[in-house]
Length: 292
Image 1: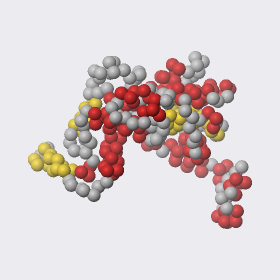
Image 2 (image 1 turned 30 degrees about the vertical axis):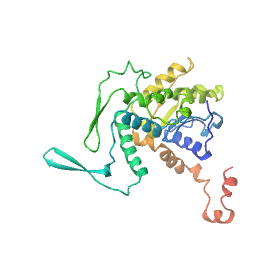
Image 3 (image 1 turned 120 degrees about the horizontal axis):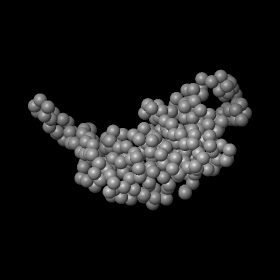
Image 4 (image 1 turned 180 degrees about the vertical axis):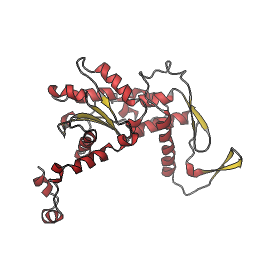
């Protein structure tokens, strides 16, 4: 697996996520927009030698969903590009709005916002690894686009989330870019197990029993249950696997901020503060002496 180097600050955010759950020891899985990072935390410190990552994040899943829609001839109209008028009770007409100075980047951004909402509302992680034949006849789920067009999602609403577990699925979606980087990555359960295996043997049992999901992408339906199931199958037989996540999607998304507020309220942390006068006298380097 390719090794990724993370800014020191980004790694420390995993400690705040762990604090938000009231734990000093855990494996924090931060499913963000650009990537997914796995960071073991023990006794309030990140075990940096064991930090692992996958380049697959929420933005890539959104890209895959948009490409899938394009391949089926479904066009997402940005909200600013039309107006809906009610011509009679319950009947609406869509009228295009000409905005010649709108940039292509803003158009793409507006389309991605809608695609992201589709992903959050319709997609869910499948109970078992995605297979075209097994999931081809699942019930369709409708979604009404802002312009009133209704589209239905079948197997794709399960295939897209399963890319987190099986990156090779991305090559089955027409037009997906940068697949060479994605294909070299491993599925999320393998990344988690690899990270824990880099830790000391004495800590692994405790880490397997305290796995935390955080980040915006972690709010995807059934993700916690599927990850727990896969880890249970692939982890050592003696390990007791427990995957936890806040029941509130907002708390998962902002767990770092919640953990930061908890840390800032501790008396031991307040002792590490330094005053404005100390900063003006010694500069930012003073923090290295006060908090070595």
